[in-house]
Length: 163
Ligand code: 4NP
Image (cartoon, rainbow, N blue to C red; front, side):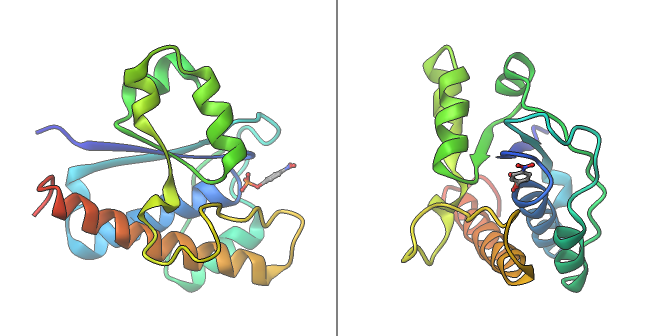
């Protein structure tokens, strides 16, 4: 059986993309369908390679029953474009970065803004970068990625990719 392979991408891979990875993992775990998926995350920058998610990211995830153990890594074009079906960017800047690294249309078609699947889009498609913000900004990220993960699962159902 082919798993659906999803890669979350942000800048540092310590705030938004590990939050997205954890939130989607929780949604599929709760639905009992985690065997259908492989989920990972990475950053466009390498500042934090090997680090656990930011303590504030881990704290708000933990409040939702999510333990984040991912270690930050940088996007690797040759490997990641081949390995993943969906490459979800968290903001416009990540999107432009990843698209600029693609060398064919098949790769470009895999890349989209994660919030395309957010049922509530009145503040745009970016997941706002919380790094220089307060705990409230991290809570907002958690709220957005949880809601959007559910939206993505509904999309896969509508497309007949999962039951
Ligand atoms: P992330 O947040 O891209 O959501 O992981 C950031 C993490 C680190 C930095 C910027 C954003 N930084 O400048 O180190």
